[in-house]
Length: 350
Image 1 (tube, one colour):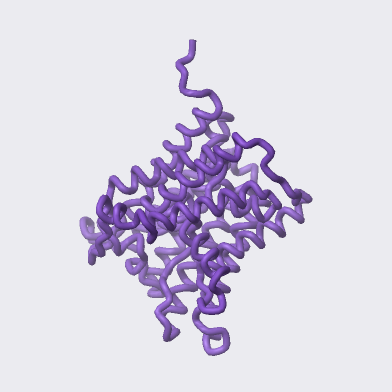
Image 2 (cartoon, rainbow, N blue to C red):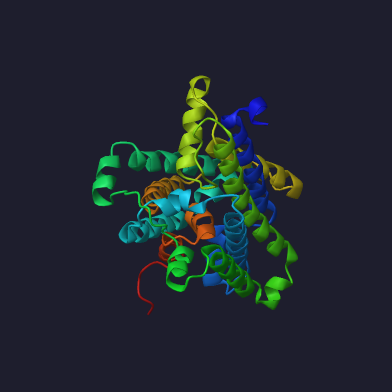
């Protein structure tokens, strides 16, 4: 297959297929970070949050089963091979969550809405990508590296490997056991069990993340080009996709470009299937200002946290990296703060 497609096209196809599943999950399964947090805080409905748990548990079981079988070496992922900076995870996660609440979507959610015809999300996607790239490799990159140095380490930055050193139990067994525990807790709800579609789409998201890990590892091991070992995330890859659109004649495809295109395509198909596709635009300048501000904050936060709600909240969580639970809780806290500002304001109740 690699002889026919080439490594770059192969990883782009892998990203595309997984992205389509993620786009369908957003439109058909209503899989959404901000929506799950808002439901939990303001409607006492934890079903969409439990979908997130199913995605994490499924991803974790699959990733560590693949690692134990020798199909991948998860320690080679960026989440485990870079020294964890606690402050960067907390600050980045809070900024991302707050920006997500202010603009009304995370990067993944904005792509899914854009696929359904929402042009307001096009603004969010562009601003988020530009802000993220300004901090990743643009004029603020040096400041970011000075404040939060990025250092590679030979010690896997993940809980199963630390626990394995302390107990002598293989990290794959620990990782799968943790994934099974998260899955069991997520399914321990009669209301959630009564919604098999939500369980299905939560598991589908986890499988999409697994497919990225397996596919990019296989290409990296069997091809000649040095393709990165990665899976789905949606801030820097949006910037990569914009860059590719401008320079495609001299730039190869990548997993990131395929993933972003897949979410757009899957969301488009899902919105047509549900009869929800319609063109929408922002009519209120105040709303546009809020969305631009939130998107910029979100882009900066994702780079500091080394991932977005999908990148850290599911992809990194599938490896059970040190950073993932901290970023996830920080995103939740930031989103709760932003939602409170929008819904009730900060004035004390009388």
